[in-house]
Length: 252
Image (tube, rainbow, N blue to C red; front, side, top):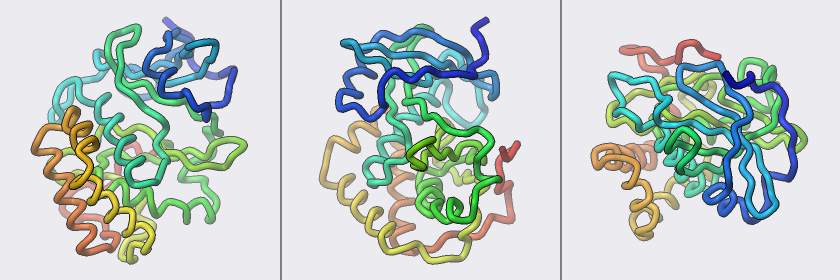
């Protein structure tokens, strides 16, 4: 059994320019296992050409079967969430790739150093107000599991990051989130502009739909487009649904 992850030694900044090469081609060394959660998740170090970064590795073979999501698909959904976040210009999903690892293929994601005691339920009001793009993002990707602990404020930079997107992009409406702070409010103009820009990229840039199409099935990709069109046409944060569970369990 690998040790529980408690301490990480940071050898270089995660903002280095060759991060993609490092994550796609670097050697992965296991350092520990995160014991919270139902799926196997590991802390690793990735080394390439003298650079080393901590990362989170989620192997497909460690995913618990779910009745409503295809088997061994959660790691790919982590990557799809990163691609959508980047295409929107939000940049709050840590850098994520899908690649071979010590326990087979899985997602490999930049590790963010943060205070685990500071999350949604302990956020100061000013950090709660920063969550409007996250709430919109979760609507778009149909996040079925936005817990409070999935919202991180990076130590030092105060940059907001969001993690754990394995339960996203389902065709059926499944939004379950703790972020209902903005229900009934209009979506800010700058976020609407990001949605319109994403629509253009999906229509005019073949690389993005091709990348998403390699992860999501045709029905899921079509549902993403439908949600996007609906949000552009009616840019209002919805109220929690009354006909199904609107919050994840547990909420933290």
